[in-house]
Image (cartoon, rainbow over all chains, first blue to last red; front, side):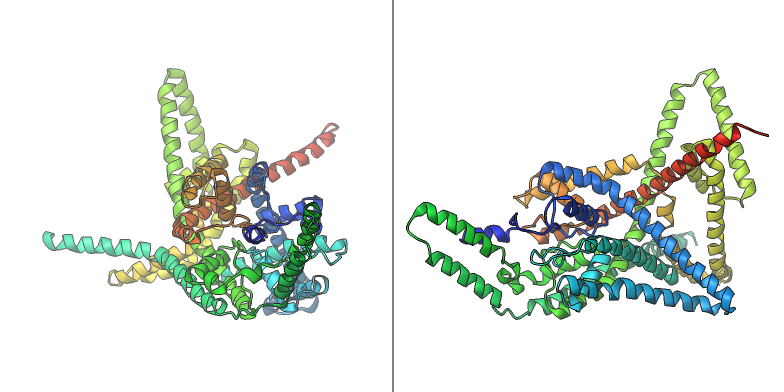
Length: 191
Length: 395
């Protein structure tokens, strides 16, 4: 019995009754590719065959710059959207130039709400985590640290609706773009 | 006077070198201090966690005991029943029960954990479990990741200059060899023709812009060599706009330069040059232009070096697994599926890891630029295809 526990400790996991995100079917592999390209790297699923690992290396080599390009363009899109809104509101209400700062802060706060403060509610509803755990998970995911202690969709006792994974992937994408934009702004401010 | 001026000059040089190295050393030192501070805090918070035997663990042990109690004498029947029950029981396993916090969260363990946080690798073999630990982890990441990013960009400049210098030297050597081989009369004439054409381009660029330094022109030359003629105009415009932006930034710092032209404020000059160096962070990285295959080759060679050394003390990793582990670490993906036996020795390789992340970072930046160029070509190609059918019937 001790041998079994020893083997489990050294990281061998049981294959079997896991959720669709814990198996190598399409959605599980899709989630794995996303976690690789965004360099989050949860580790709940990782290739163990030699061929899989070699493919993973080349996949990451091409995928990570692609992801960076996408994040940059999404960030630019969001920025231009905010500036358009600011322009429109200025023209309509004839506010002064200082209003742009206000609008920027407003946009920042809404994005903060949307990407960091609201998703934990979703996670606590679907995963059964507390709000703190959901917030911790959101932060660690968006910062691309990705420990893997909390991963969505890994609980075999719960059923997840069809739109859940897609919504979470979209959130990861836009949230990371927004965070990269914020960091760029902060660095510009420091200069 | 000659005797006294020499030690003075030596002192001056020492000072210059010191002030040139100071900003870079500053960043690295602050990162190291940050890591050590974090290690202390985490080892205090997580190491002193009270381990109470949780209910889940007690149920697990009871389940084990009841299984072993209910084994009958028939051997084959035992195996089936045992397998099924153990399978069901083991799926309730949680790693937390077998972890001793004092052992894992000692100073070096916490240091390793802090490094995985601010490099965003995030293996996940150790992670904070207490509430205070989690909040501290988030705060730590919030400040640590930009700091790490700053260090990376700063050292990336040095690496980028080294790389581009090596590459330019190599290309000069290559062109010299090619020129010496093909020096017949006709080829020399052709060479002078292309040279005059290129110098015309250079001159036209200089006429439009303000005078550039020779180094900048050479660098832009190597950028132009490979792109086809049609896109040169667009490229020139983009470079013009980029240079204008640079000059507006320079004019901001010019006001500092003016008052430091006085010889008495010589010390002020060094300070302004130090301050200017802070502004230049990341500019070398943007100017880098080496072929991406070269970068990929450099990455592979670099990782192979580590993959050859690593199995010496990690006995359960062979070359292929060590290569995979180093790659996953350097790209900051960090699955955590490969467990290290001696994380301490891996920490000693921290300089190697930083340089490796640099190289990967530069390669990804280059890949980004190439991708954008590729997309532009594709889009203009598709655009041209749409225009040409209209031109068939001109009025």
